[in-house]
Image (cartoon, rainbow, N blue to C red; front, side, top):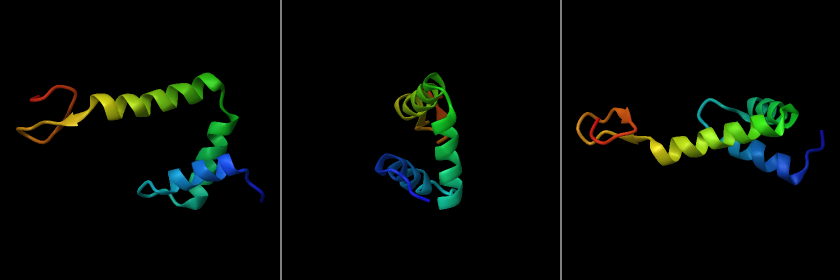
Length: 69
């Protein structure tokens, strides 16, 4: 099946995740492709929020939004 450069890039990035092989990455990519723009934005924003707001507690090493938890 032919995939565009953009779709291949998403599949490649998703495949880097633990437990996500190329076939699962393709399924996720097609799910995102079929979703609304708002749903795709919400997913991408949730990922960005995770990276910006979540850290590990310096005392117990648990996941937290405040350090120390």
